[in-house]
Length: 483
Ligand code: NAD
Image (cartoon, rainbow, N blue to C red; front, top):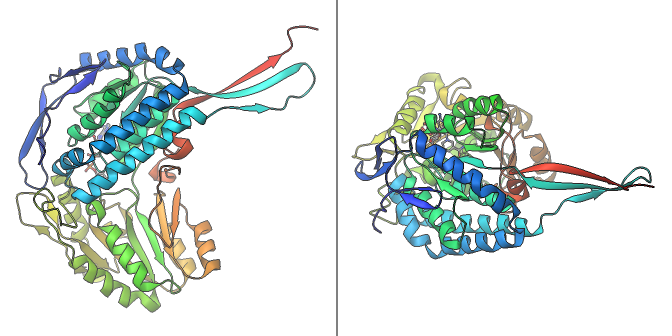
C-alpha cells in the first residue's frame, strides 16, 4: 500500500504535526493495528484556525467567481490524478473496498466541478417593481462567512469535498473537522485544494475530539455557518448549540430507508440491485436501503434470493485482497450495535435467515445479515442499523407498505420497485423522504440536492442547493435619487 501519511493539521496555510491537545491513534479496522498518530487541536489551535478563516474571508469573498471556479476545478483534477493513492488510504482508514473508494473519489471530483461551475454562473434575480419611484429590486446570494464543516468517516472524501466545494465556491472560508478515524483521507483531499492554489487561511483543517472542538468552533463569533453530517443524536445537540448562537446550521443525519417491492416489480432485477446496494460500504451509508417491504405474493422468493446473494458476498480485508465485496465495519462500536440488533430477534421477533454473527478476527467484521419478518417494534424496525443488516417484511396491500415505510421519524431516502406506471408515480408521491428512488437505488449525483426531513435533518447539500447553503439572500431596492 501507499505509505500512510504523517498526520498534520492545516492552520493559516501552514501544516503542523503538533496540536495543543496531544495525539490520538488511528486504527486500521480490518486488522485492528495502529497505522498512525494524529495531532489533536487544543483551544489555541482552534482560535488560530478561526482567526485565519476570519482574516481570509474578505479577500476570498471578493475574489471573482470565475477565479474561484478555476482554483476549484484544478483541485478536482488533482483529486482525480491522485485517486489511486488516496483510495489506498481510505481503505486503510475505514475499510472500504478499493473499487468503491476509487468510485467515491472520482465522484467527489465531479461534485467539486459542479459546485465550482456554480461560482461562475450563479447570479441573482431582478424582481419587477411596483410604482415608478423604484428602479430595481435586486436579489443576490452573498457568502455567509467562515463555515465550520463537521464530517463523518463513511464517505471520508465525498462528504468533506461536497462541503468544502460548496463553501469555497460561494466565497466562504472554512474550517474542516473530519472524523477521528479518517484524518489522512481528509488531509489528502485538503492538500489537493492547497496545491490548486486556495489562498492561505481560506481552508483550514483541524483534528481531535469532536465534542469539545465542535463546541468551541460553533460558539465563536467568527463562525457564521455550521454544516454537520452524522447521527441524529449528535445533530440535535449541535443544532441546539448553533441555534443558541444564532448560527445557520445544515444537518444531514441518519436514515432507515424503506424499499417497497410491489408484486408488479421485476423480481430478479429488484433482488440483484437490493442485495448489491444494501451491503455496499458494509451498510454504513445514510441512504442505504434497509427495510425491505415486499408484496406477499413474491415474499418467499425475495427472501430466499436475497439471502442467497448476501451469503455469497466475499468479506475480508480490502487492503490485502482487492476482490472482497465487503470490508470491516469502521470501529468496534458498530460491531456491538449489530449484535444488539440481532439479539432482538428470535421467536416472533424475526428470523435470522443468513449471517447474524461477528467474524472472528483482529478486525471489525460482521457477516452480511438478513432478518425475515422482524417485529414492528423490534430494534431493527425502529432504529437505524448503519451496518450490514437487512430486514424483509411481507405486506398485503401497497397502502399498508407505504404506512410502514412512513412510520419512522427518519426521512432521508426511500425506494420502491414497480413495473406499473400509475403505481410507480403514486409511490413516488406517497413516500415521505427527502429523496425517493423508483426502480433504482441511487439518489445522489453532483447536480441534485441531497438532504432529508424529520429526524434525518433539514436543508440540502449537493446540486445548486449545495452552493446556496453557504449564502445569505440579500435584497437591494434601488430608487431614483430625486425628482
Ligand atoms: P458517532 O456518533 O460516535 O460518530 C459519528 C460522527 O459524528 C463521527 O464522525 C464523529 O466525529 C462525529 N461526532 C460524534 N460526536 C460529536 C460531537 N459531539 N460533535 C461533533 N461531531 C461529533 O457514531 P458512530 O458509531 O461513529 O457512527 C454511527 C452513527 O453515526 C449512526 O447512528 C449513523 O446515523 C451516524 N452516521 C451518519 C452518517 C451519515 O452519513 N448521515 C455518517 C456516519 C455516521
